[in-house]
Image 1: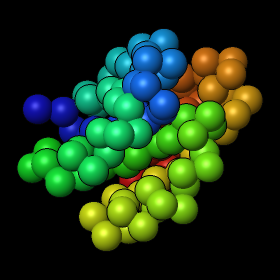
Image 2: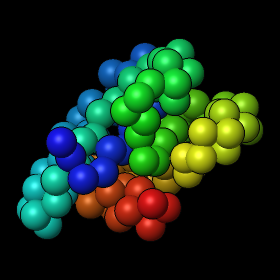
Image 3: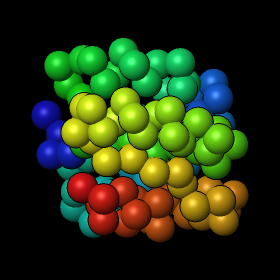
Length: 105
């Protein structure tokens, strides 16, 4: 089982898949055992209700308008969340996004 779990959420869970791969590569290069995955924003409620909740939730910039609604849910679940920096997302800087997630945990 992974040491930490990082969930990314976007409109369909697909546009973040390349970023997830880059984050996984960065974590592996640093010798960290993290589970990093992407889901659709429609899956957030189920993930927060599961037995295996993420340690941190990051929203893709394209769904940043959902931040306030999602923050209420993550606050109730005791999980930190934020919107991924648009520049890091656009340039697929997995190491930067990973560092941001780690800073929140």
